[in-house]
Image (cartoon, rainbow over all chains, first blue to last red; front, side, top):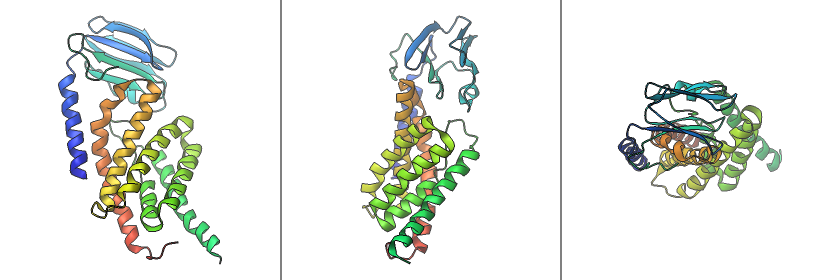
Length: 106
Length: 166
């Protein structure tokens, strides 16, 4: 059983690293609604609402401010691939690559 | 003492343990990069009930503890995650517990894996985004570890419990 789950985990990790090229754009959604799509190479500060704001800086994106109780999204730091999720506030900041289709379709 | 009183006391011990475990896990958050990792100690109690006394007591205590622990400590949004996680875990561990070859630890790992998958599903519902599934590999690894831990606790407890069903 453990081997089965381990194999599943390894497969998942492999798929993740294979599909996540360094991105070109940032897609921000709140409650499933698109807040906006922004180029990763343009410095920007996006204030989603009074609960969250996102900063794009030097080709990386991070959660600039969040009032969620756990603050995991803030601890994620700066990313140039993958996503930052503020679960309590239902905010998803996804880095996508325009060139390759997203394996994790949004 | 009537059988009924004995049952209340017996199941009460399990439920009390679950609530205590839920409270402790609420207080002590593990410093891991992936959010929301819990030890899931209460699942050890549920597994013991499942193996020792059958499906009905295990399901009953599980429902009660999800309700109570989340009412007391986490709130409605926590309840949604806990519900999906516990529901899928039960759906997996009840049939799997019939297979003696897996052992308590194997079933526990399967239940833990199902639990995190259920919670990821809830997270996808709440954020309306499939990006949450990126956490799946890491969560599966922790599910194996915590599943082994709770499985060991459950197996040890089962060894010491008198064989007679309640």
